Figure 1 (cartoon, one colour):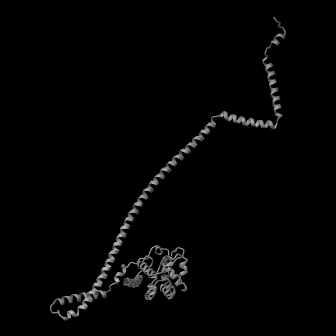
Figure 2 (tube, one colour; figure 1 turned 180 degrees about the horizontal axis):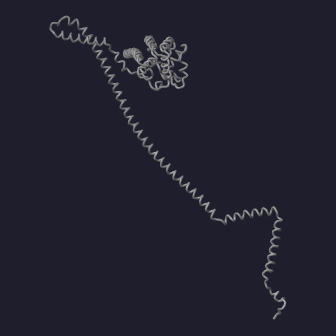
Figure 3 (cartoon, rainbow, N blue to C red; figure 1 turned 90 degrees about the vertical axis):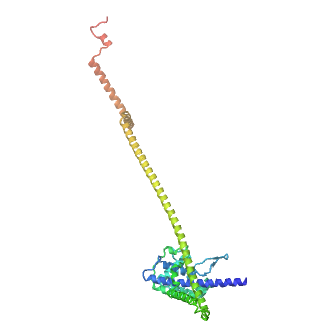
Length: 393
């Protein structure tokens, strides 16, 4: 058991060393690609070389980062911004306070990504990293043993980043690249071409030629003897080197095949999502058309009802006017009522007029009766009996 645990520790330490070396190597490649890209165009958030570099630097600064202990003894994950904020607080004229007070950036990981962009635009990324690495107590407090920032690779990292000061960066601090919910993913595909240079390829070809020539010479009976035994070790070493390079190429081939498979899966998912979105758009368009037709029908119906109400109002007004014009008695009664009311009011105001009107009417009637009697000379029995010359029979 002790031997097994010891071998596991050795394997883990060896894997950690390989991981550190690979991250530093890939970071050097990314810096080189950024410098090459800057010769032709300005580097911004849309450049894939910058996105890959930012992911690599984020993973380097997050390598074996300690978690934050809570009151209950649990360890919660922590971002590299917590380390940078403390370690670079004494840097003169730093951007730490401005990034800490940014309103549109809330999470710790998003603030760390904003710091990388601001430091690159200020051409001070190497200065910040150097100042943070000099504060060894803070670095030791935030990172576990075996971290890149605690090893010899940290000095290489600071010198590597110094070449980025020659590049003019232009970033927007409100884009999707600052979203702290997505992890930093490194794409190793652009850096596979750096695994073998022209010298290594020529050396491989020479080794294959020597192996082929040695094999063909050894097949002849002239070369059978001590030289064959003396060169056996060199042949074995050459075969081992070729085998290692073949395995490396095979691993790269497997990585590329896996990458192609993942891209195919993503493509199929995107195609299915596109179909669902198109179907949803069609359904929404159909519902929109139906709602539009219903609203148009409702508008037409309301317009008809409004017209009918207006026609009914005109008819009722005409009917009331005609009723008033064809009912004179009512108007006379109303006028008489008004006149009587006025008269009553006048009588109340002048009560002596009543007697005056009565006397005038009595005098007129008396005079008319007297004139009627005198003009018509009506005969009466009394006059007949009292008239002279006539005797009763």
